[in-house]
Image (cartoon, rainbow, N blue to C red):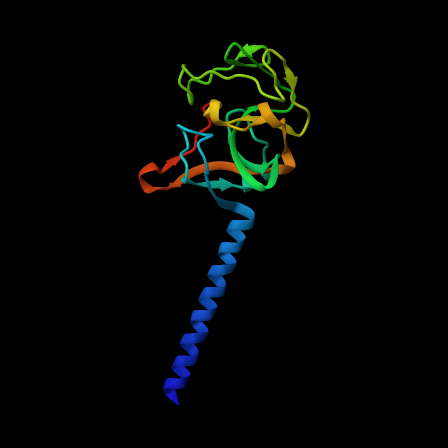
Length: 185
């Protein structure tokens, strides 16, 4: 009888521990941080295919994304997918690409902190070469760091703030690529 009681208490304790861990995981996943897998080379060389990034959800409740933040959002061409890109223009900014450079509010944007000087940026279907666009309220203009291989705002336009999932904060896998994701500005 004593063995049955101990087995019952052990089982009860195990189930209780599992439920607490599951509840804690759920709270963290829904309200604080969410893992995201980088798929493709659109953010190369700063993020690599199959890297895992921890995305901060809570910061969006207190502040809007800023120029240079790397965000995860619902893909405008396919809302069932998530994309990861860098914020190039925030509400009220004017963005233009001309002669391989990005212009923000009429000045060449200094991207040297995350791009090599040899990287050139050209227009697309939405943002044509030499044409300026104003970023509307509650929307963002984003680009991948690998400009030649990125489907981004140059092709499909702005990202609405309600489509943004979070701001990328930490690369945690693979272990040899572990790093904080810093805003270059």
